Length: 502
Image 1 (cartoon, rainbow, N blue to C red):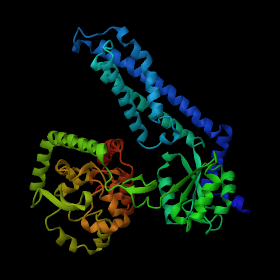
Image 2 (cartoon, rainbow, N blue to C red):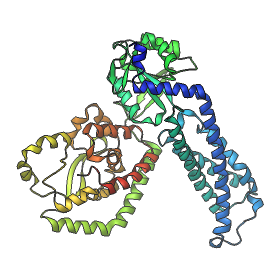
Image 3 (cartoon, rainbow, N blue to C red):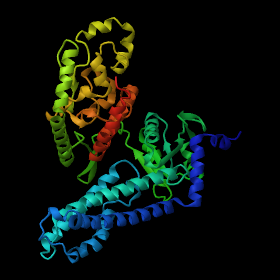
């Protein structure tokens, strides 16, 4: 069997062949041109619908709740109803909402839609302030803003789903290779394989130290050496080359790759910093005496981001405590009467910048838990490995119920109000667990720990400890207000299912 034939039997390489056929049918640049054209049309329809629907609700459905003398003449709004949707499209374009790298992945696109809708809203406000003849109702303006964001985001959500279906047939996928099969290269592969919304399809590794077809990570194999990179790009129609910088002993190889392929229109060259798995707080480049220097931010959230997260935490935590106070009182009574001991359990954990505090929980164990555990020495290894037991003899009957639906964690809302925790964040860890995070510990402590987070909605205790660490690191790197809202929404079904809760 020839090397070429042997390579083609690997599933990821077979998919690359499917992508090449799809690109032959409709070239990839045309695929994206078509998608952007559909996006522009959808955005135009949704923004127009938002303006008209806001007008209908304000002056038809809800007119009885407003001042009867308010200006309702259609002529007053004609200019906005016919011209503003096109201005919105210009704002979308300026903010990069039709740029390939900003589409089809994560919550960033929705964040950009919200920002653009807000900028359009502010433009109308400024126009009304500067133009005394432009008089319009505030209710209409607010509804226009809300409807624009909701309708455009909804349209883009469903268009994404269509693209995800097309990706199964090889469309809207870009074949990619990782140059360097060391620890960093394999870590990059693991991340890209886990989060498939990037639109990158990994074909394999380019590595000078391993023979062709040598299995390196999951279904990924070595495709050849760096000297054969040009042939590999041509053979698999590669559009993205990702360089694991720590795999290069000298920068000469890196410079040679950039010199050969950095100016090519057919392939993009991207390079990992080599510190990505360690630094998550963000980097910025500043010039000193015309020398660009990289600055490492000390904390993950700063400025407006920090204010927005604090406001979301405080408002939702306070509202939840007010609404749930009778329910919390009932749980407290059940805990107190079910077994001797206090109502609350205080756990010493690590917070922002390593500051220690006591996280509150309803007590779910018997007070003599250590003595009970000594009677089960076979559980010692499991507890040391996961810091949890699947069948814990120390848990009370009411405690098992509270844990199943995460009700024991509700008192942590008080920790949120005290700015010791956040509603969403990485999981809490005790001082003893810090060593298990190894090089990641510095990053975990750059944000507040959360009541819920990625690991809670991904299976909770059913996933391995290493996987929890990876999920926490992903959250720290990719925080946005939209990710927080998404995780809060996903927490509800995750809690109701009770999977992985023990």
